[in-house]
Length: 121
Image (tube, rainbow, N blue to C red; front, side, top):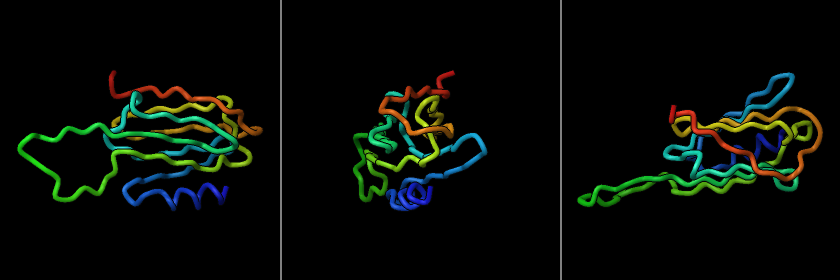
């Protein structure tokens, strides 16, 4: 568990993440402004949570960047807590906030997790 907390501290400064725990599960909440279910991928590989996301942004033609602090891409590999499982994991994204619900069980096999876009309702 402390490995996951340490890994969250090493995310880029523009990425905000919270880790919550209950008796049955972990909840990882990651702010990803501009990211949708179509531009994000969450999966488990070799005991790690892999999050790949890209922001969609449009720039008016008459403007140019003087400074840009938020990256277009996030590629993060986070250790899966030893008592968490990818089986039954669920992910959703609403208005750029990714929520990953990880049940507590045995080690997780490699698989992709579908992401639903709750903001399109």
